[in-house]
Length: 304
Image (cartoon, rainbow, N blue to C red; front, side, top):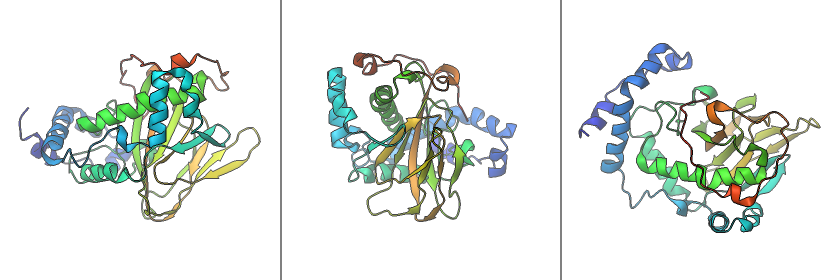
């Protein structure tokens, strides 16, 4: 690999926001033509500009109780009740739990600040009004965050934690969780303040807050709509907490009124975007089917 890939990538001119919002052909061509260059630039950036001893992305960033319970379940699936005990149902079909250790989040946020300041072209999420500081996380998306250590960490979150927990809570999604998707999203009162009611093109969604302790914001609650009785449950995030729910649960992000909120949003779905049928029955599966490494090949399908 040439040692000037990073310099060349930084010299690229990103398509305009208008072009990206309109998904003009030139935008797709930009990412296609520069894919190898940008991927190599991320490798060079991480090797030359990131202090691995300071910004180590690994399981130590996760909540201690969660990682210990998950580790025990992987070793002995009959102990998965230790994981379930950490998951609180806060709305019908919506569970909340501590995902990241709040005291360790500064490591991840520091890494992401280095990402934002890298000047390497990144593709924001089109599907959520081109969120300005958001970035695509999954390899299936053009312009994704291709730094090797981040990709290893991202896939660990999905495969070691999200998939078995999803199967534990929503067993009917088994088989509709072979493919992954992810992006970051950033809420700010002056730019991207809210998201209207919607459902996700996922079997399961995991929404993880990245705010640091003391990094306060007001507003930006999530409204979850109960389709059975019409009730709305409003929930808020604390540093490092996560909410997990089926993708077909309607929800919305209320306007943020002060401060900033940043989250990872991770999805699982089946091959070529297949989802469980609406109202699919909760087919029970054995615990060992949840705590099993899934052998699959990314199919390249991206919801947006």
